[in-house]
Image (cartoon, rainbow, N blue to C red; front, side):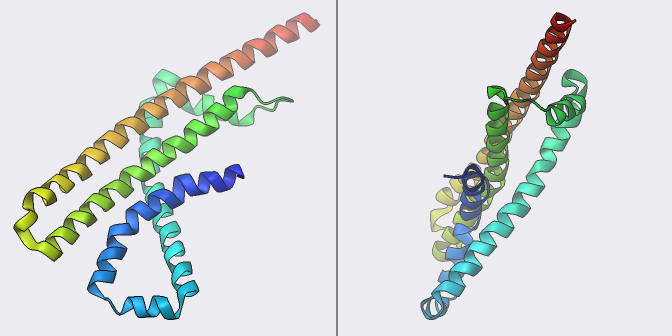
Length: 191
């Protein structure tokens, strides 16, 4: 499968579906006549749903990536993030190092973690609200559990994304240093 399509599915569509699923279910429970519209206009309904998933997931990813910018600033002194990032982006090579693919994969995974961080909160809170709306306070502990899961998933996925960010900083720093060292050595040998 094309990498761009895989990235889109992983980073955007999957978290977008998770983000929206309980709210679509709630909408269908609240307005059952919508199922008639879906049966009458299935393609239009699917296009609207996919578009909604993509737009909300993209907004979610954009909001969550502000954390990445924050971490860049916090780690600037330790990793020289800005300089290393621009050095990485401006390097041209005949053969791309394996490390570049690793960095690209880790970046995608970090965005997935950030987007899923937001999506999981929406999912768990949406499920808790559906339980409350349909069953009242009879399932208070289940609702409380879902709210706790929302907080846990936020903290856990934020922590994991922060660790991934640090791995990216270290990898760029080490790969850039190795490439610079190799190019300096080959320049000296050619003299």
